Image (tube, rainbow, N blue to C red; front, side):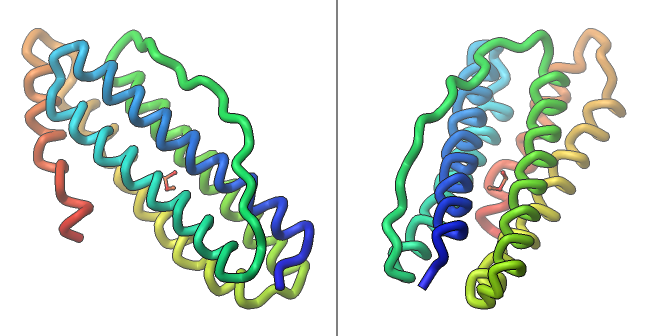
Length: 168
Ligand code: OFO
């Protein structure tokens, strides 16, 4: 059985994962509007992945006999100056999500809720991967630079990552 505090924190995380999905879906729409098709696919894919994270927590709560409660979600930002800004914000957002997962793990530890503590280790590992992924993309964008044809090459490069996570 989950403690009241654990339930409340897991509900918060459902909101974080839901919001993450919306942020990436909106980023995908922005990329599409700029003709960056591969970047759009990349974020679309990532939005779906975040939704699976939300479902994972939702299902875990149900399995443990608690009722998940979906809270209000903020509106995601829908305008960006450059594709670099999009990835920079995505990277910062992933760092924020890592901090919320770490928080959850701390609560599970304090509550001596070892089942949840153990369950959350998957999310800890996932955040390591996601931060590394967005960090890698940012490095590549910096390498390609902001010259005339850079947008084309950035989009080509991001295209190599589409589908990669699903295969991993
Ligand atoms: Fe849910 O993994 Fe990123 O945020």
